[in-house]
Length: 261
Length: 328
Image 1 (cartoon, rainbow over the protein chains, first blue to last red):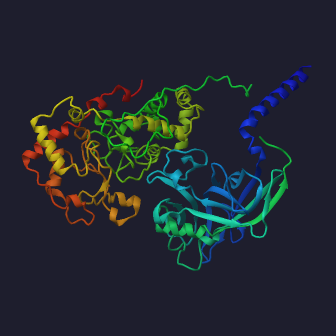
Image 2 (cartoon, rainbow over the protein chains, first blue to last red):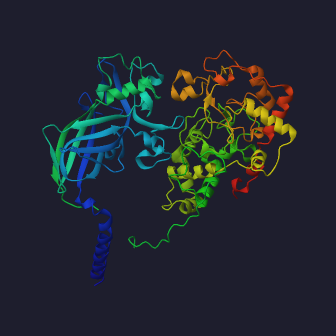
Image 3 (cartoon, helix red, strand yellow):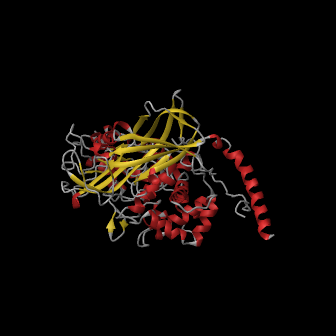
């Protein structure tokens, strides 16, 4: 009897909750789940912090100890050129935190042709005071002496680096003027227009080919530039390199088996 | 019964900044996303005076920003930090911050809320980390209570910590000096002050513009480079050679109690400052301010009167305001 009463009580609560929730998230129930997953790689190998050994086009060997970057302002463009944005779209991709590399959000069902995002935090959030969640200065991605977010952080070491302890340290930031490091990346689905709908979870897997930070077309090498930790021309140049590193390697759609609210 | 909210609605007492008559409007509203409340102010006040915000428990914000010195460090060129260190610039007074677009001598800080991150984490200041500060606050029942009073969700996080501090420091205002009272017709200048005011208008008001006594610009006032510090000021932030050796024009309000002067506190008296502008300017500097290319012709008598005028900029009400005192 007690168990039954408890069951009834729970049922009533659920009804009550569902009813109040409907008003707030009514629209969201009509929306579809999209998950973007980032895979960081170097020369096609997934990045393994500390133990992975890599080399760039200059045959400079290196290991990585930290890899973090901001992805913000994610939007999907429909085949009809309509742009649907993720609300409050600020994410910190942190290589050492697997969960941080998968971004789940809701978007209106439609036929989509491309996805775009900003590498970094838009300038408005850089001038609007104390933020929280992904933008919390606790995340170690905020400069205290020259206000602004570190948009992209790569740390490691290389025998070719002449800096202290053979460090490589790229803290890339700066959000205004000609030296802004903010870069918009747009990736087309090509012939694979995807039909996003509420019965399916659409998963877009994006690979960051970070070996592109180095290329044979210029003289940016670990040997001559192991460190960049302030805004300026160098930071902007490095941002230009990693902004070309992203491509879509797979899009998966699977039926949603449960509702979450 | 997690679904049923028995909490009374979150009640706060809203406060407003004073906008003195005739003052320019601040370029942005520093409290636009941080509604100023009595509860937020009181939390910020406790944090401002709490030395536990530093690594070794010795350095509070108020240690270097003393109310009796208009929230500058009294009689110190550089302030003292963790492990017997010095800061590398003179601590500025804190008042009328709502009218400042950028903070710090080099303008590196673009919002009042994020400023405390700098002294909090600098190894030669409070030398602490944010996670460690938050851990200390979360373990303190007084703070748990104050955060609940100030913010509806009561969460102790960096955002609330910083917003509360901004509510306290942003509320410190100077607008009741003798100068202000004279302007309002409540008082009158002595003859010497009147003459000093004339000299001020002729030579100083170009940069130290009334009524804030700063135009918040960055200028090179012809000080020679300190070879040890090699501080190039604004250029450190912008990376532009044209900004080399430029520093923010400080307000002259309360200047009689914020000595020593200049970004590195190298001049100990107002007389020495006036002498710098009369005979000390290094006119060979490429980025020297256009207004200072010619050395100032200020006679000894004018210098005495100018200092009399500057004395009228001391805000006794602000430095004795019990709302800004260390809380019990």
